[in-house]
Structure formats: C-alpha cells, structure tokens
Length: 336
Image (cartoon, rainbow, N blue to C red; front, side, top):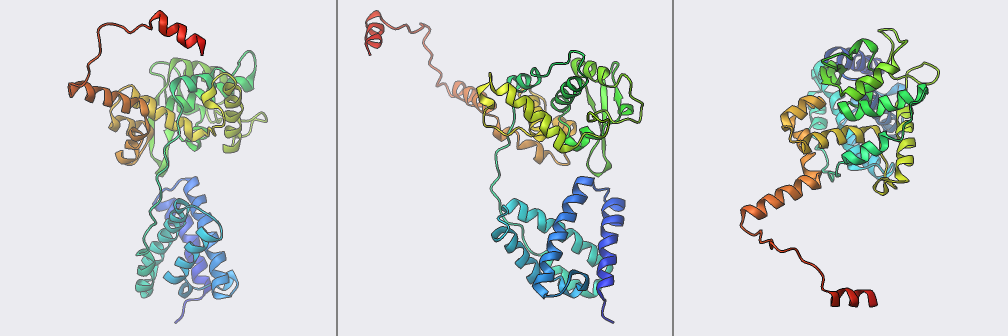
C-alpha cells in the first residue's frame, strides 16, 4: 500500500517533537535551523514535482531532488558552500529519521545519505585582543543607570565565560553563585551543563543587576522586563563598539557580534597558556578539534613560536650595542 502525504506530515512532526527534542536533546537554535532548512526544501520540492506542499509524498524525497535543491541554494539563493552544507545536514538528519520508520525505501534514502558535503573555505575566526575587549567594556557607564549596569554585566559575562549568546540569555538568577567560589551554571547544546568561574568584577556587576530579581528570573532582560533577545544583545554590543572605535582605530569598520566575544575569550585563554583540552571544557565544545582552530588565527602566538624557533636554530645574532643614528643621518632626514 502506498504511503500518502499524511505519513510524511506525521514523520515531520515526530522528527521535530520526538527525535530532535526528546532523543537528541537539540537546542532551540538547532531546531530552528533544521526547521528553516526543511521548510525551504519542501517549498522547492513542491515546485520540482509540480504539486502543492500538502500533496508531497515520501516517494518524492529522492537524491536527484535533493541535489537540485542544493544547486538552487547556491545558484539562485546565492548561499555559501557552508550554508549549503547546513541545509544538507538538516535533510540528512531527517532522512535518517525516515529510514528508522520506513525500511521499504532504504535504497532511496541511502542515496540521499551518500550525497557528500561540499568543501568550503575555512574563514579565519574574528576575535578581539584583550585591550580591544577592555576598550569596548569601558565605554559602559553604570552610574545609577539600570540599562548601563545590564550592558556592562552582559559584556563582562560574554568575555569572561565565552558563553554562546543563547546560553547567556538563558541564564537565570538561580544559576549564579556570586560568593566565593564565584561561578555560573551554563546550559549548553544537547542539554549539557557546565560550570564557569566568574571574575570578581563580573560577579560584582551581576550582583548590582539582580538586586530585586527572583531566583527564576532571567538575568538579562530588556527595558520592559522581558527576555533580552539575540538582536537586542547584538545592538548593545554594536553600540559600544562604535563608541570604542573613536579611540581604538583597530575596531573601525569591524562587525563585532556576540559570538566574537566567545572567540575572544578562547584566544585570551590560549594566550594565557591554558591547555586546549581545558579550554574545550570551558567553552563546552564537543571536540578538541573545534577548540584547536583558535591556535591557527592568533598572530601573537605565531610570532612567539617563530621567535623561539629562531633562537633554537641559533639564528638570533642581536648586537649588544644599541644602534643610534648619526648626526649626519638626522640632518639628511630633516632635509627631506
């Protein structure tokens, strides 16, 4: 008996409600990303088979249609290979779910699962040097200003903990411990929890922020008392980056997002000599390979390594006598 569109709808619902949330414990961000990807795919598929979305069937989900969709993503929508691979990941995960419930189409689904990801150019990670991060944070004034206290607490918190913005915005008062040992419980991807220590300055600012808050209240809220959004956090950061760029020229024409503060925390920890495996746990990475990419972007660490190699190779031949320009040379330069 041929499965109808109702079977496809039921499997889509069970994929999001039962599998992603119940089995995988996926974050809201992952669920939204997969939802966006499958929504685009089904809209394209309906045009591909020339039927309404409500009439799509399991037989329509084939490798040639997926390949055509991926081509559409790059050519018509002008998405990058990275975005193309994200869309493919969402489709693959859904197809894995289909395979567990519909073995009669195993070969059909297997062809989709065999579609390779496309090699993408790995972009360099953007981060702030410690003096740049401090320049941004110091733009916030907190003199009897509740919004200023919140903004400074948010910037310090992001740089201190390296939290993902979703993790930071989900922190509630009960997750904070602002006496020694000062720390916060972060709820990360896959419902994983981790504890992060807090600087004295971060804890002090948070203490001012939550003076009248209840244990279940969110720490970071907007002026109306509702949850601060991602866009709201991005706006806060952009505002102080603009101010800091007036005196810190390296910040000009740079887009500093909340995630840049996470990268900045990771690089600062590396510069301080913290082991990569410790940083992995600090940031909540699933693999140390994710953490290791920060090593490749830090010029200071590369210069230190090169300097050590130069000395080890016996090529360091610095003169004990400091060079000074002669009066004749200075007179010549002044005449130019």
